[in-house]
Length: 371
Image 1 (cartoon, rainbow, N blue to C red):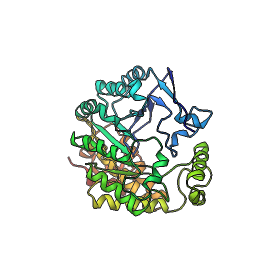
Image 2: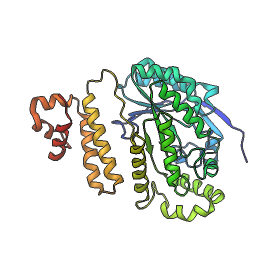
Image 3: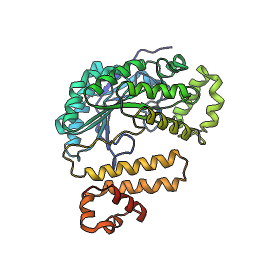
Image 4: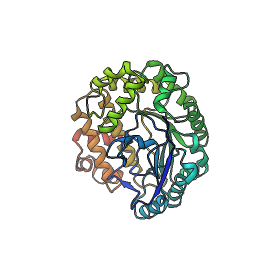
């Protein structure tokens, strides 16, 4: 039974989440969101997990939307004291039409020269393409669209049930085309790829092909996470709508699991990579570089190392091998100097002196430096 949506304005004490360094998926160091809960109500949403959700009744997640009415003011205060880096922000669920907070938060980022990463399931984001273009011209912007199937995919009507009130994927691809035409880096966040529904060869290719046709430059693939109360919620949903898949999900996702058991996910990720190569796009988000950044070389090398770590993971290599380039990426991210200066002054010995770099990785990084 559908419930009438309730909006609850309140004033939090803080809005900006800060990480020590940018993540290696979206390249965002900060995140800030204007709303809690989501009217789209996608059954797989990890935001129902206890560490993210403020609701005692998990069904309130899509029916009681908490509105952070002072979000733009708090964001301006926080960013005024922060180092410039990518902010993961904006939320274009239907409540945005009423409160306009996502636009106001983007205005803050534009005013202060912060790049943004916007991830959306709604074409409503097109309303603010003028503002996002201004951010891009000054500091860079990426707009990704969450898409897990296309209109002509096998099981399209069945998958539609899982996304509930989210706008149809073809509207998201149409919006993607307009951002691509505006010169803004855009693509698809293919998350989560649901086993038995979204991972058929036909659907994987349909999503990648449609992304490329829309001018998208990447398809970032991710699996389903089923932790604590969200796992219980999702399994109840599956039992009601897809009972034939319940046993396979229990095998793939043991209680409390954050990812599928076994090598099934690696096979899917490698297939996405193969398809992206065929359609001349990437399976990773290119790292946006802020104009005038004095450590551009460092950040490009970090991107290369992070992508190496991801490749080792999806190829099923031992975890210790993937950790080596990841730790090296963190070390170079933390380096306060331009790595080209370190190399110009001390050569390979200078690179080997950076904590976290093995001799082999120092030699590889040497090959990546352009003086």
